[in-house]
Length: 385
View 1 (cartoon, rainbow, N blue to C red):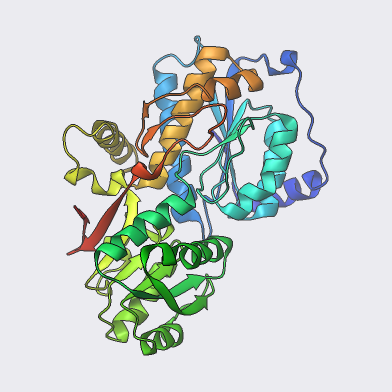
View 2: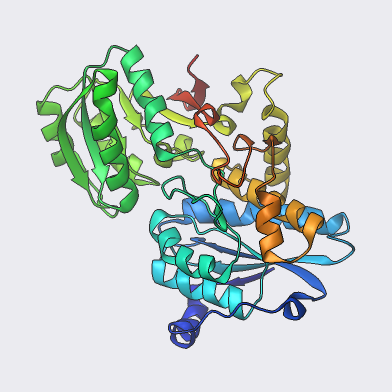
């Protein structure tokens, strides 16, 4: 593994900012190893996502190499830390394509960073398995995602609110692309479920307090509060909610859910904190017949044994995508177009995210059935049946 962290990026940025991406010839791709690139926000504000994603991808590569690699050759994972920067993501993706000559790229992991790199990777014909539900992968393109659509996630959430008799919601959303997009999804879809949207407030990703925003929402007397954000911002919202002694259920977007809740929300978790999420966080409540249960349990044990800590579905995405890339390379070698075509043939893959199926006209591996409703209660994640 090669990892480039923030202390080493200045020279790279200067040299590669105007780099022209060249597509290596077949001869250039013939080497002593199979190269997979990875760009993720390993440090900085997006580390809650990028760190487990990269660690899990490395775990998959290490296990494949221990079993003989691909055709007796080593798999090399070349990793760059984007720190959630769109500019750095583009610089490193160009380097992966032109200098490192990787055959496939894992990541990036935020809507802004993904948007920044896709035109370049598509022009170069490099398969990209990215880690966000927000960007719609185009049919026949070189980019894929294992996540169900953003709309599907919000429909699962609104279905649950309707079943609870909720008629009016207030929204607190972050001002980043994910918060903006999610807020618009709720506003657009709520009416279909008999729900009106009342007061809408915004918060910056770096805000340390959301009391004023939630005070305004509380004054409008909603039946529930919808928090749309990601990462540690959920703790800021929950702390203010608890301080204001609000009693309404809080529903949070999938991007704000993580395995760190027992620590992140200690002493500040609302009494009713619900969310659409993936099977991994609720694996102990899944029936033995669920096709994802054993893959999830196997991965979680491998990750904890290796890194001595727990992970969540962001780690699961890294594991699934790395294994899908490795399987494709086992079948077709290093040719990028053939790798794209092989991924398009993946059917009923029992991953940790969902049962994944791709096709030439469907580059989004999971559907609405990938998500379940969960509740964080008594420091545990519980399936809402």
